[in-house]
Length: 411
Image 1: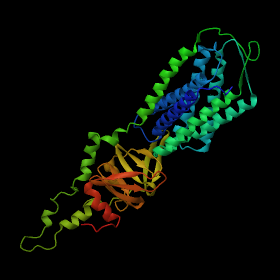
Image 2: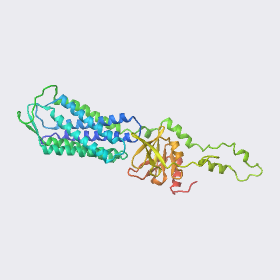
Image 3: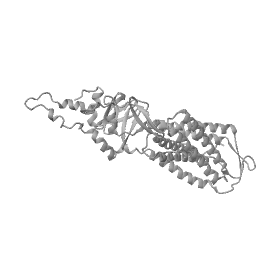
């Protein structure tokens, strides 16, 4: 049954599955990084685009198969096959989008998703009707289900690679090949028999011709492609910062006006006899909390908000902090997660001996810097960790950063 396939449609089916996988799992990854958008909207979009990608791949593969000329598709089983796919995809993505991606979450989700993909395939095959019979090889049925489960497990791990675009693209391509492999393995085990043999039923009820199905599939291909292109659009913070971020960042860039001059004036020495000025001592004390106040203790941990509550991360594990509207996103070297602090509050809470504000919207841990290079009028630094995040450095901060790294003496 595998002979006679249209190679162009086979290639298209792999591309559609890969694009759907990339888009769906990149949206799932954004759920874990904080409330940049409504998590329900992201989860619904991820489940929808991934289900459409898998379902469309299935029917592109069916169009590529050399089926009998009188074959039609029953509408009810065809719709049910899509609903099965959407349901199991949504449930699986929900379980891996909350909490830590532990094996206790991923393995059951992969089993559910793999079984759902296989069910979608065979329910869709049940909707194939005409004057012929169908039989399935049990060994190849079992193999196709196993491939679906393995593909699901690999796909559910994709969101961990969100910070690395190349690795995500490779993973999505592997997912598309695996899902397509499940389909064509199942088709290899399907045999078309003359009328009266095997599983056979006439087109009872509403049915769609292959031409009508081709129109629906073509529209869904455009939907998957559009979703993929939209997922490549940079997030708003990459292009320009909202006014709220600039407003809250401005106080941190201004001089430290913590101590008014009035308490110092009565103590100042008379002009004829200028001893050592009191001002330097006052400026030195200001960052420690101000005159008459105890020194500020640097935070040892940062709060991180997740779908199931608040987690905490040790300050020593933090690579960078990035402003995002009234909140920030903390990078631990693997991925970003949302912190309820503003960028100014984070700068005030973190140890200035370990952290430095390198940009109006970025703070980095100087001990984790592994690379610094020129970029435009400023610079860019790379931090250690699996994903090696990069952070821009404003022109005004380049000299200070290099001094902290021992590359030049401070002015």
